[in-house]
Amino acid sequence: MPAVAHLMACLGRLDAFHGRRFEMSFIRRESIEALRGKVDICDVVSAYVSLRRCGAAMRALSPFTDEKTPSFFIYPERQYFHCYSSGNGGDVFRFIQLKEQLTFAEAVEFLAEKYDFKLEHESGTNIAKDATSDKRTLLAIHEVVGKFFREAFLAATGDGHRARVYWTQHRKFSLDAAERYGIGVAPCNYGTFLDKLRRQFSHQSLVASGLFVANDKNSTEIFPRFQGRLMIPIRDVHGKTIAFTGRSVDGMTPEGKTADAKYVNSPGTPIFQKGSLLFAIDLARSAVNEVTPFLLVEGQIDCLRCHECSISTAVASQGTAITAQHLHLLHRYALEIVCVLDGDRAGRDAAIRMIPLALAESVNLRFVTLPQGQDPDSFLLEHGPEAIRELIGNAKSIMQILVDYHLSKSKCTSQAHREHAMRRIFAAIREVPSRVSELEFLRQLAGLTGMGLEELKADYFNTRPNIPEVSLPKGDELPYDAAGNLLRLLIMEPEYAAAIAQVVDERWVEASAAGKLLNRILGEVLNENSMDDILQCLAPEEQSAIGKTLLDGKKSEDPLKEINECIKTIYDKYIENEIIKITRQIENESGEDFQELIRHRWELKQALREPPTIVRTS
Image 1: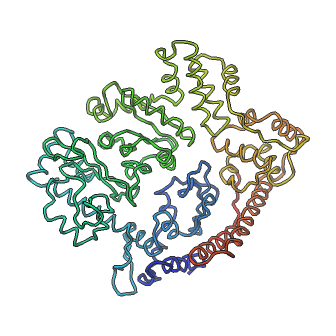
Image 2: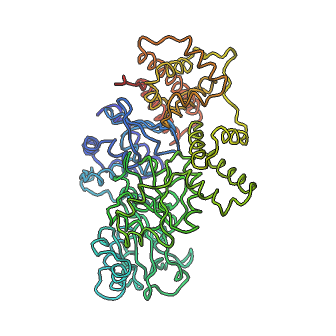
Image 3: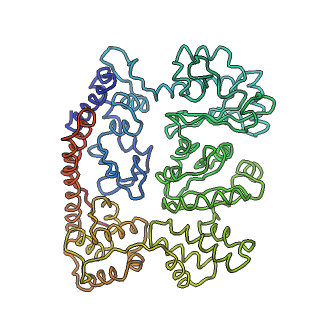
């Protein structure tokens, strides 16, 4: 067994041993290694984030933290990952442990199920009965209940018949579509099904699933949350059902506290948080790419209609306003999102609320506004998919929406109103983390309003809160440390800028004046801004120092070698400091925390042996 694999397996056993059942003993080591050989870590991780090649490695936004600069690396040859923003690292099993909050044995079983791999157990059976976590139990409950809803939907009479009539005649979907999306019905009477569930799962697990409600804490009686409703399953990124939405149906939904609610959703549970998951993300994530955006709609029926019309990148929120977590999730898979707005005031207001979140997340957001009184479902039924594709092709930019909303003739009836509107637009632009992008939005604003760009810039920066600029050492000269030298190379050899920005993580760079300037420039490069535009946005003393560099500096004979030497120096210093910090923590820890720190220090020492590099550009 390779050293990395052996250590991770041992740590998995320790993780399972401390405070939990010793699950590792059930699965044969040879079986784990066979599974490891079958699974590609890049394939597994790509279900969570969009990977891009970076030299010999793959890079992505961290799946563990909310970040704007990618700091998550996979090394395919070693089948190993390291995340600099969270400090996590390890093999494919460790990744699943962290992402799915599983023990080592559960992570092995998770991947075995995903890749249809038959595990061998030391107990002589293929089922480790005690290895099922709470999370797996909740997933199992949803699977069983989802099957019950499907069977009730297909029943010849009663609620099933009424639900099918509603689905096919009122909503205009086919029965084949119902099968594709797992549509079911929660009957008014569950019959003996509740007794079956009680025999299969504990009372606590059934209540924790959110699908059933107890009268009070001391009662063993449970009641269905959903009755007399069309049921739409909500699935995670892997296609596992983790919640449901129940749609009321006239003549079927019984009287009660929720009878007047058109839609009732599952509550938040350990496997479902509606503020961080989007409906149909499991279907849409594989259809998006760098040129094909997500289509964000409001309702689940709208979303299903899009998929039925072969618009396969559609997703929808779970009955809540779009959050920064939603946008961050989408941004992991695609560079652009097109948001479809209902043609009413509420739709426009929703767009305005979403724009600051999108700007802060550096998400390229565009908007389609439907005719008054229509939603994607009704529009597609009336006009067909080509009509909405045409609207998507002409989608409005963020700045167009801001100008239409704030500077409409009905709102700007006086100079005071106009000045107030401009302050609102400026406030939105200030959410942008990039100075170059700020200027680009101001250029767009000038073009849309006919205002002079210089006048707009003066107004914008005069009303901007004071932000301290980076102050360089006296003499307007870049220092000759690793950050300063890398800055020189970055400016003198701009053809390497994109590669450097993809490799160097901002956390590696010391918070010196040169380090801060280096991080700012690399951040602008990651936003695909040209070096000329970036340099124009610097403070006067920064421009002076860089001008001096351009005048005095010589072109390097081997820039690639010098760049990689600078990167190694910056990287090594960061890793060494992290090792020192962890070593100090180890002295004061014990138990599971101690083992975790030991593992983390070992990973850092391994990472120190293989510093990241860039390769020669073509």
